[in-house]
Length: 113
Image (spheres, one colour):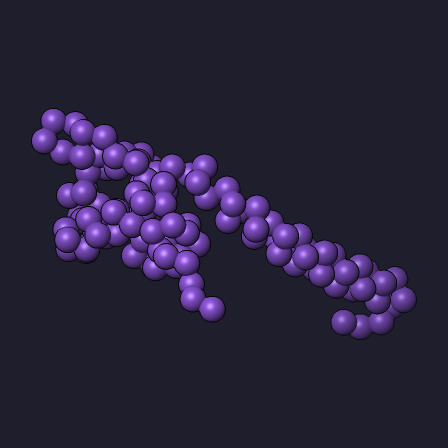
């Protein structure tokens, strides 16, 4: 089965490490491409290419500021991924709780761990 196009799927868009780094750089607020280039030591064409993909899926928006474009993270677009991951976090926490309960049980019996 073919994967969805990167430009329509948040999951595929953030699968690329450089795009995640750009999102991390934007977490503190709006930035121009040049500032992102400086922060990440990437080339300007690379950053622009990744910003285009992130814009296509709605993870970043931009606005004109004089001769520059400022890019901003749209964190709410990560909500579907967060909701999907929450199921796995819940399952992992339940498993850790069971281990914790088992260890307490061993302690109550006086058995070494």
